[in-house]
Image (cartoon, rainbow, N blue to C red; front, top):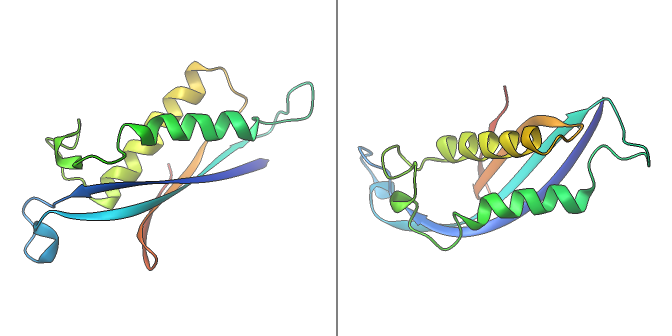
Length: 124
């Protein structure tokens, strides 16, 4: 099994609905996102997925979140923009792209850092 890892970041604001504490107020984060994809079969030049392509896929997903109030972005206009929900959202979006692009890889995990000391990971 081959595992590739890339990371990127974005900045956005959010507030947690139903939360009692500081995070119920609008506040911002510089989010760091780390994704891992996995697969067994390399292409004819010995790559699982070109790192450039994988970074482009991640960047396209994050561009929809960058410099936004996440509470106004679908689906976070109806579900809480928690680290957990953001993590799952990114996982699902990249999974869809890998499937539709006929890549030799599938998602392994996403880790969302909302600060230098707080992170959430998701995998199936």
